[in-house]
Figure (tube, rainbow, N blue to C red):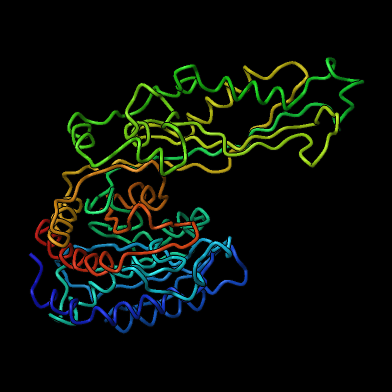
Length: 457
């Protein structure tokens, strides 16, 4: 149970905490923009952490600065690492926003701004929970360290080198990351798995320059035709990926997980309708949609470049064609093994007269978090208390690189407590965050600190 004084503090300071979120959301902290306001945002965060009683400092990287904070250490107490990211996606297209993305607006029980849900609102509520414990009781049930990065939205290129260089500083007994959402309204959720990623760019080269399709058609191999045929061969008729060894190493969901997913408030027709499609026809169509999205690997073409695409006609055989391809991976799959299999497939299917080139853009290992660990159990108890409904364990088909880095490099299974909602529009116009979830999320975070202390004694 949450300390009554801490709970009362959060209730009494609800309006002030919302004002703090408004201030934080005003910073256009866009990681891939040279004119961004990341330094101003960093300064605000350092000042805030200092004000609530943490020792805060800026730690530089080759990219954007990290913000680090820590509570006065108490020997014998476990340590919790709180992660968040202060960078946000670009707001484009601006004409599709109802209000200015960096002028936060409250309406209909939500706050609208870029970064509201992803991720400023979600990490700030954890800091406000720390504030509540310190101000209401003068102490924390656990030692706390805070790490806020500024490059998550561009793939966290500085994160792994930073963690490698600061392992001692980041040493902890548990971690919490909030950068996700409820499965549905009224269904508080904790992620237990994230898919990994292998992102490749495949280019097929033909003639040294575009050539006349009348003079050379039927003689010179066409890279666009070859690419289309190769992509068509990447799946069989049942939607299974046809790369060699693609399904050799994967951990299937447990029977208990499958039963829990069956009980979730999921309507296949509603999802299809919301996406504007007639049916959910992707992937292995003999499997339920949630299994396909959460527990099976995939291969998707994200874009194709090649040939003449301007208005009118131009009769050519293109000199090259390119496909950008993402492969989402599940537990026990190794990105290196998957990309090796992709290269083998390309080599086998490259026709005479075509030269293939494969570039590996990025990879991320999948994550599977045991549900019986102390951090996850503490998170479930805390979210259940705060939201009045038992928190459920779900998976996510996306990737959150920091989760894998924390697991692999620091040996921590993070509690992935998501406080967003499925319609929060992260990365899209009119991004929002529920004011109720912002407040109850802080209550859940404060309860989590107490629950974690009990389980790690």
